[in-house]
Image (cartoon, rainbow, N blue to C red):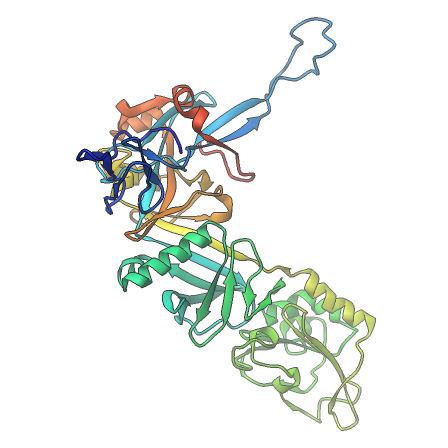
Length: 495
């Protein structure tokens, strides 16, 4: 267990050493040697403590500038300066501000590039939070708005698909608090597992069963996905038309959204590809682009097509010719078929020439590995902002003006425009062990606000509670957990 850094929390009750924890609305009564319902706080000899250590994130910065030897003739000196270590105090393990009026657990003053800065850290209790899940697959996962379930409880829904990916929206206050107690608990547990980079299995009404885990390939109905498509059928035609030219007479790229036909497509016209008389099913949008060639499914290109020849509606004998070479492929190149028309203009599968196979392989080469991405999204409300300043709207305005940098465990956040402080962060860029929960139910996530010290004073911040980084390290550094800075994350105090 960590050292006591939560003197503002808790109150003794009676003579049995019981401590009432007020770090969240549950208000657990904790006996000596026991922890609360969330396991984040415990009673150690009548004192309420945070069970997880404060996490300090550190990086090594190479020193710059002109250098000279410290001693003339020194044989051990390599001609450089010793690297400098920088420390960022994350909110992981810091504790919370509940019941809202208290200053943040740590308000840390430090100096970066000659500028005095302040970082305010707290673990936020987020009833208003959810996950946006990006699943790289062409497979049909379920109808838009279909319920996403875990153990029979709805935890979210299918939302609008994006280019090459299916999207889910999970969690949110309505599932956490608006349904049954079991729905809220299952939703909270599922979100916590995903935020902690673990795997969960979900089922979609009228659709697939999925295994989701941040940074891993999605598993759809027991089959791991391999590739994210290079583009829609029309895009694939445009990208590879030049490489197909001269090797085939026609190409059909089967896609649930936009199926492409080379000879009709503008790319084919520019290359003087003659008409082939092959008519594709579906609704013709613009030349060479067809919608609704089939129903969504787990077949070719996210359709329910298993036999690609089924997308051919007709072959015009006035235009087509015997020996016409036709390549049919999916948007990932994982499925392909090469045929030639016989004397009766019937498509007959034959071995694909090496030059044609090479183009199919090129499609696969241009597909990125399929991955599941989990983005944590939350709104910073009263308890967070009041812990920073006595006038929370001033903080909101400076965040919106980009004069205050918001991070989640040091990870950069996307700030949504409009009112409030609504942020989103990739859980893979957040250190391990950053997320927790309280049984209200709600997720607990670290959040940090970094800004110039003079601006913090003008905002009416809790300046009297600020401590220099050096003193914090002296008081808590020995019991803290040190983590390396996550590569690729910008340093919060920079710029």
